[in-house]
Length: 147
Image 1: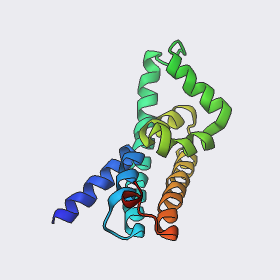
Image 2: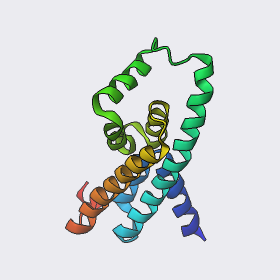
Image 3: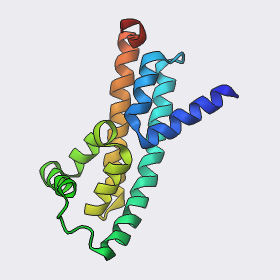
Image 4: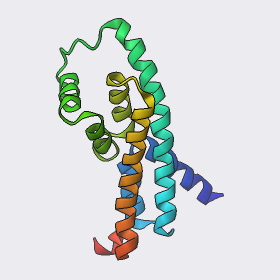
């Protein structure tokens, strides 16, 4: 039962802060690498679905209050990032740098096709999971012993 709660915590954490779940699992997990990859990518997938649809609702609601007038520097930075890299760039950066919720909400505020957002975000989450845990499994790297 203790393993169930541990897996549930990693699952939920990876849906919100992907990198905060990945790094400890890479460092000192006792499970095989592919189980950790499955846990993290499943949690990230759930986060993508939840925050894409939540982001669409939030952006529709917030547009009534004219909060997107680009007078805030961070908001201008997100617009600049979207114009420079597009949805694919936001999706690639979302899991590891800007977090899944923020990336999905930004994408949903600029793109109305939820299917496109979900495809890009899911490919990004799965790609990062395969890359990070695949390196650990392929090279048998134990980060805890290395540090």
